[in-house]
Length: 474
Image (tube, one colour):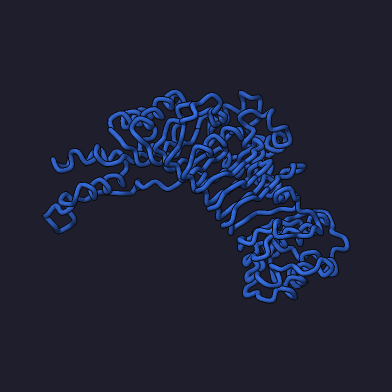
């Protein structure tokens, strides 16, 4: 945190003025903020929803340990006992080499290396077992990371490099990535803990062809222009990018060269992305608190889940969601009439639009939506959106706060909208979140309950402003 405060002061910013800083920066154009850009749009969204928690926001944005990292197979609490209590026989050492290697890989790296001193039986186990290294187990000795990577012949099963604050970190990264590429790495979690936050990864990042799982946090993707066409991630199955600055072309470069990729998660992307999905393997795509200009599902025959939650900044432009070939798509969210334009082929879904087989996705059974029930134009889009997904069985709706009034959009509006097939014939479960008791919310729920013929369960979650059932009744 001291490094962060020093950087704020170098930029002429007052680290004590947390809320004022975030609000001023969040209102500025993203491109003028340099390395602060990614954090500021997240800040705007956070402060719009929780206006009195700037201190919590400060810690959340700039303390990477608060992010949810993939769990490493090695546990810092793991201990190895060759001789259990009241037993004089070393039974562990009699296990096959494969099991001994698996045991060693679950120990903190310092303890794992020390097993070589137990006996002749254990001498070569650590070097022959795929390496698991969590740099937090060696912190703050960053030089020890270099020593371990050089001493172990590979392959590397899992590396978590998330705890390095030191000045040497960026300088050592190129040589580390080259070792991983040469010796083989399966799972890599790599987080930038030093300013600048837009520090570009070394170009040899693209050389780790053995990767199966990759998590990047607080980096900038290297430019892919001019890289050899043979560059490929032939084994990459999971890709998660958290507050990573990237151009659409560089993300496309990775996706186009990841033929078995199944999961793509992007958290906090602030440069406007145009995501074009052409993949025979992708199953999950999630873009959380991310600016996306367009998501175009061109050809994704295995896609099962598509989630987009955009940054809620005032005046933000709409994101286009264009669905082409996705015959197995079952889970879709979070559609928002304010921020999403839904398109099928060359047809844009508008209020009171007639639907046809070409503008329907019958495979979707779970739909999540954000709705401003106080905004007339948003409500007019709901029937059109719902008609595009005639077989929805689970419907989740988040009522979004607004100061506007929907005017005369009462129960009569919903009756005049006509039959909505998914409500009448398919929805079995409704979850309505952040219910505030507004007239437009009540009108929708009245229409829903009188129309839903196969409904089995309905749950209404009250907004936090309600403190008692008496308030709800009133």
